[in-house]
Length: 253
Length: 248
Image 1 (cartoon, rainbow over the protein chains, first blue to last red):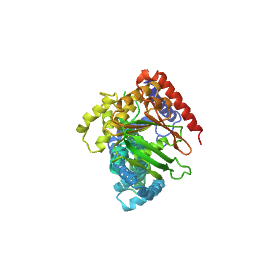
Image 2 (image 1 turned 120 degrees about the vertical axis):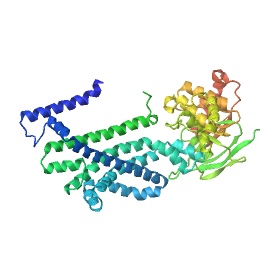
Image 3 (image 1 turned 60 degrees about the horizontal axis):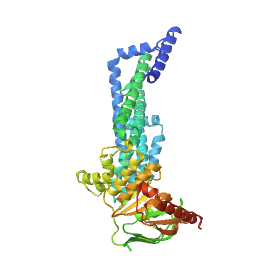
């Protein structure tokens, strides 16, 4: 229990140091607000900020769902047709290595800000789901694949009764990585939209507060984004632990 | 003279991209109801031969000629190869379910197969809750559940400790009535214990070196393992195996 609380102690120490440094060095809040002011700002502007956080988190979640469904579906297709995989995997890789921040302004030309943010977030979350799902489908127990063949199982039966369940842990890993990336993607697109004076969401609030030199508000929004990321990761890690307990080679607790 | 189940005729297999054949010009007749052990050094193609019989590999030359229609085949691999997300019952039921049987129809057959391998009442257990020996028993039950005429075992107990291995050999002895067993092993002791006949293979390329018929064992279990006749069989087989390994 004490060991598990260690990160919290470290965090508390850092925050105390920050608070103390700002007070002792008399740094103005417009440059570096102390943690206490950031929390106070968050509290004071809670309605707007939480609203914005809900928007961003909602976008990220919807994008993750789209990327998850699309990534798994494409991985299943790849598994059925190696030709398709050879043809389209390079395209997916090229899409993945393109810096997203460069694509976001383009998307904003064609799409409404809301849709552009969603597309942007889904695009970045898509690849880790696809590649992890594809690897998981390929990685099914060879002996079991042969046993299925020996017993005359169809390709579809092998895919859905063996490869897909075998791949679930990998798919979850992909979703966990994708969740973090979806949030980053949503923020990048919101920043681009914010630069054009459009949009909503937390990143947009950061841009807006930046224009008005409201540094404590910027920090409060960043803090909320951080909490969103942690919550997203935590929920997925928890689901993984509950749903995939059977897959893990661990004794029951 | 018992009727043959199938005949292996001049069978050869060269894996794609390899210069040397894994198996070259092998002839062997397998009799209905016998337990035939394939014994030999690593690289002698004994696993390959088993996979060819199962139809998991296609020969480059030669053929396997079945007396009648190809019978149902049960296969046990070196690993238990159980589905970790499925309980023992679902794992054992797999061949039946793939053949289109419902879970309810399969249940009594699964229970019977589990009882035969000594896993009675373990239907709800998950693979990770089982010991290595119990996993192998489940794998054996899965191979038996659809009552195959031919049981192919590819060094199934090689990774188990000695005592567990003996227990599983005993279990296999009890299962052999009415089924033809092809058993790959590199253990002289296992072959001497289980086999009616032993096919000694040599390596580079894999080929049949000698076919040895063993005297029908009058006992089983510890009584057989402690008997002078068993020790003599083991010594004889070891000598022949040594010769097969030296042969070029």
